[in-house]
Length: 140
Image (cartoon, rainbow, N blue to C red):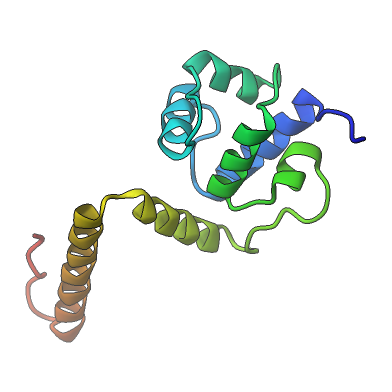
């Protein structure tokens, strides 16, 4: 049987995972809010998130799996340091995948709105690229 993860080593891996997706690793309020948006079980308090970030405690296995899915890492790596970290090599790829995961959390009508917004941004970018000498395209 595997021994429980050491809080301080979990702390380092949690902070690295947060940094890799471009999320602040020093903000327990933001961590608690984003964790609670994603986790389907009991929510956590800001104090619990603070203890994770300080290396004072380690989340339960269910919470660890939710964090790992959000951070795009394997639960084994996050909890115990076992195996590969389990995310793409570049930070940009992690941020992109985290954005896609966030979009899937939205209701269908908000997903549609996000797609329309991105489509408009692409149109503006294309218009700007085709008209580099003229005035910038208006922002919507």
